[in-house]
Structures are given as structure tokens and as C-alpha cells.
Image (tube, rainbow, N blue to C red):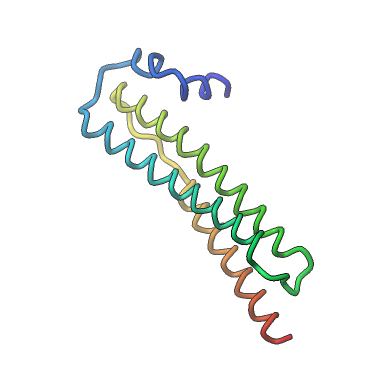
Length: 128
């Protein structure tokens, strides 16, 4: 694990393996990283907004649970983004198959479940 984390911060280590890929692929990998980072920032902003602006919901501490869940999800997405960027760059340099990931599917399910929880909370508040 520490080896992977060290690679995130040491570009010389990354560039010491394999051969340089076509720069267009490296730039595409960087754009993908930045898109994931924007997603992480949006989740963090949503968590802060939930904590500050959502009124108390009918279920005890639901607002706080949603806020913390969004903040943790944003942090997870941000860390996953840099890890995926480094693993993809390394695979391109070594001419290997790009790393597969279940993370987008998991993220989609978590966001959908969070949205459903909010729908339930809004309906309970409206009914009650």
C-alpha cells in the first residue's frame, strides 16, 4: 500500500518504468483524473451543503448521516482518482492492459441509494 502511495508523489518513479506512451494518451488519462477530482469536489460540496442548508429531517440525524456520507464519498473518489491515474499511466508505459475498475458502478449505486434516501425523507416530511 505504501508503495502505491509513494508512486503518487514521485513522478521520477513513474517515468522510470517502461517507455513513454503517446502524449495524447497521457493527457487523456489526466483529463479523466481531473473529471474524477471534480466529482469528488462536487460530493464534498454537497456534503457541506447538506450539513448547512438541509432542514432537520423526520428521521433522527438523517441530515448529518447524509452530510457525512457525502463527505466521505468525496474523499474516497478523490483518493481513487489519483490511484487510478497512477495505475493507468504505469500500465500505458509498460504496454499492459489498462486496469479495470468496479468503482464507477459502486459509486453510481451509492449515489442512487443516497438519492432514494432523500426521496423517502422528503415524502415523510411532506406526509407528516
